[in-house]
Length: 337
Image (tube, rainbow, N blue to C red):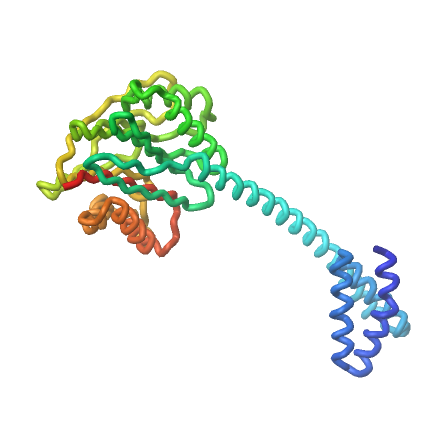
């Protein structure tokens, strides 16, 4: 590197002399070409300033002490600047490496947690889950039974990033490993709670609702582990009611029993499951009220379930000026008429 600087001093000195004497812009073009060589060889700012000082002293040895001192002051400033610049560059490289890892993790999460919306007689299902950042702390998963029953898990990890994504993967494959005959909602949550309590960091826990719809009797059975309450829409009465549930979040205690709830779905009825990214939407700095969550759902109730969730998401996205602060997950089960 020293050879590069030494070989550049004479050329730089000639350019400097030419510009001082003529102010010819062709000298500036020469400096621009030289700067590209400096960048290519990673020449530091203080080395360029030092080269300028040497050229200036050779051209004008009669320079006043004040000018010389000022140039030395500039040199010290550039040394400090160069050190900070290197620190910033190092941090940028580390940040880029972390972002690359997160990007890979996000792609793996999409692959590992991918689930298809099942088709079942008499029920229309719509689902949407949009992360606030690259990794999604929300999760949903469908399980289709032999007798056309539909199992649905919707969850939210208290804790974000790669650990949350790994926890979600563990939950999915734990659910898939259970035999169908034991897929009762409360039993599922009790089993998952033991898995989470034993394998997940104590500072991170998971809220979840597990529901199971049976087309044979049009009944929806569900249990909750501290998750955001859902809503039931009674088409005959044109009325929404909150699903009152109790249950401790997964991973808080080792042995927890969960209560199972049941409702019968009639033509036009809907059940809405969601995460707090929906209910804690902010409008001009304030959290929206429950009725404000339900109004857009009611507005689009005549659409298909998938069209509904997509329209409702767009509504909330616009409401927040396209600045999502939390992961958004919304699932609607709609009994066909």
